[in-house]
Image (cartoon, rainbow, N blue to C red):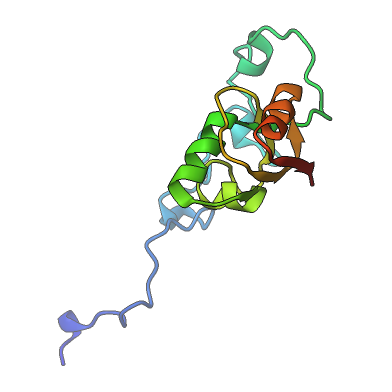
Length: 148
């Protein structure tokens, strides 16, 4: 073993810069923060959306209308989708779980059946909501429409 072959054990040294550790560190004086400005001062924290004094995007974009926080949003499924599901899987009862398994609705979606399309099969449908025309078409085909 010779002095020129010595080196630290593997994993014992860090590559990050040690900030504010005197003249020998290479970042003394300003501790790597530059000279002036808010970022060089202690206690500085950049506000979310701050763009260096430029008018932030959230204040530049026009705002209008009303967003109802209590709005209930449904995943719309047509009668034609129910008919094709009946033909493909040969099922007589359709509920929200089956629609989610088949990929027509998402895991957390509330489902509403709309009256678009033609329903020939006698189905028992159980979902969150229906349109009037959908209930009429399901009952006309001999099926039943019940809500969860």
